[in-house]
Image (cartoon, rainbow, N blue to C red; front, side):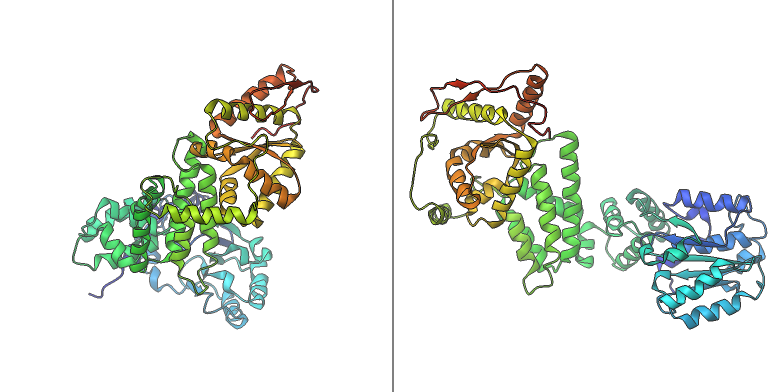
Length: 527
């Protein structure tokens, strides 16, 4: 007996075995039960989700001599001879997209059906039709013969003219859920005696990207191996990386283990793993981590801003893979940005790093100057806390949304144009959350960087003044501190508290206050 590939062998012949499109199936069955059948339908959605299969089953059901609850009986003369029935005409618009083919179709429409009640035309990939072909089809869709039904299928609904869409009942097919694909694959593996791991089933479903046909094709390909289908076998044959592999890669960033990260990337390079597929997987998993962080506030070394920036960088890298540069080199550079050079697992020459940082600093700051409010590296914790308190207070005195928006734009412009890697990195890891005409509060997602960022505030202020011509006094705080300060601000707003300037002196120990007006609700953006 001639071998039949799995996706053809297990293509559903009735509505009950079509997976993942319950609403559509229910609607179509009801239209048959109540004899409320339209003259034209359009099925849109991703590949392999059951559009053409549903069209064929629907064609069988509307012509079935004894339908059961809207489904074909599978026993009558029409059902048993469905495959050879001349009343069901399937056309591939990808290869028959000219006006002549459509005109030939229209000429045959006038002929009555041979066996069934309806003559059904299934036009697959209808968006591939030429403009003239669409125009020819439009006239027939306007007033087709009573015995004719059109079912158009497309993976690109945006390319179908609105004049065609307005004359059809539209059904949007969704990607099939992984759990549904896994359940179906289990059934087939049991019937076909295919040995497979549970993890491998999930990986095939994941790789199929919501398409049952793709899942069955992958299973068919992998089943040719004489060994049990496992994650390792999938990675070897399909040239892809499992979800576990992606999680292992991302865990190296959480663990700050740069050596392991580079080992994994080099392994993917040597195995010729498809770069686009790899990056898409990384983005999907990172996006889930980012959403979980926002929902649950769970702590990790990477914060929401890190996840967001990483996603944008990876997505942008997909536009660069056609240039004459190794794609994995781009991936390495993107990921290395998220490692902390102070961690013990990072094995690099720190002396060289220090020299480079000093050279970069000297390019922008030629003379070492210590103004009155500079914080030395050996500043005490008490003085540092006093410095933070004073600057937060002074920012809130006249904080306004307009100042905040201006500061955000100025800092963003600076980051895009600055050549000082040290300062640029500090600002990229921070968000401007409040600003006045003189003060700016920056929230940094990494608690460990707060003290060091504040200690280099003078250096950043000098660089900003040189770049944008404006003198800002900066203060860095972490997420928890900003949350507390914001809550205090809201409470003070309700209680009409008066904020007063605290003047900074050389050692930040002596202070005096200057009375200021009561602030209003437009001074700060609650983010």
